[in-house]
Image 1: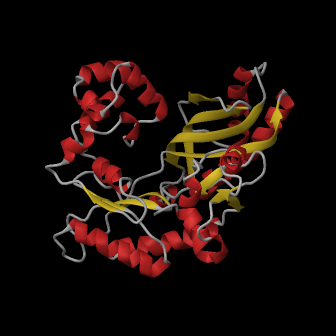
Image 2: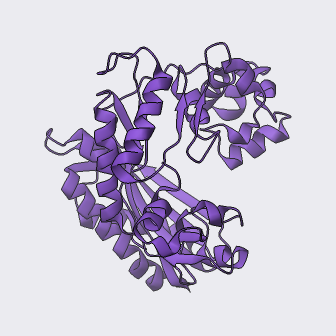
Length: 351
């Protein structure tokens, strides 16, 4: 979907149309959850601190998120997908992979299916979507971002290699800013540069991910569309209105995320064996600390104790802390009956 949260707000409030809109908290410690295309012209992006967004765009209009509305619209979109294929792998409320190799409409053109889905979404929700069509997930994702908004871009099997080689590695889905910077230091700037490296070289510098990078540089991605894709982690975090400096402030601040995380574990009937602490300092430097255990964390008291134990490595604090978060991964069902689709749902953080 195109600027999903912001587009929903502009749809429901005509006075916002044509204006730069940010969905999120407008306070000093707020964060932008989504930005309209009018706001993006000024450099406003999701996950940007609200104070930075306002400096970039003084006329920016902040709107509080309405996740219940976004979920309802997402269900409408999912219903459109389901008219064409049961093979739907959701990535978030507004994005999914669809395998239409065999489809419920018995159509032979994926491009025509994408065109019909875009029209059906527009009719059902009044919103625009962008589609990427290709022969694997990596290329389809790249294509979906290539011609936004309201775009449709196709990468045919004969075009995959040529398309990949012209892109900067930072444009690759799955290569983040830190990895892209490391690649640049190694003289790898484009897809063509990446393709010219051996798999052994990439594994030596990037570990197991090096095999994936070698494959996508050659436009190869054999991952199937998985409608039963399970969530790999569950977490919660909080941004504080003032920086935290003492141990007591840290433990008090972490209690909210711990409580929210454990409530989600109970709701989803799942536990985890790896605990991760996320810390963002006042200067926006971010660190994580993780620890894995032989058995799952079994209750809120144990979760609290272990989270505090991870946090001791921060003391004495080198600078103020603006955000704390906790997450669990290596998830396991507590009764064998957890709804795998439920685990896959996006968990939101309130603003």
